[in-house]
Length: 38
Image (cartoon, rainbow, N blue to C red):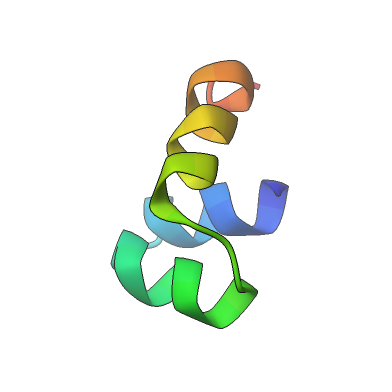
């Protein structure tokens, strides 16, 4: 989860990260809302 959030901060596209991790975009954005400020 933290890896996915760090990848977006590094400039990678959310869709590409979700495909790579096998998660939905909804899951990613739920994680971001809960853990994005850590």
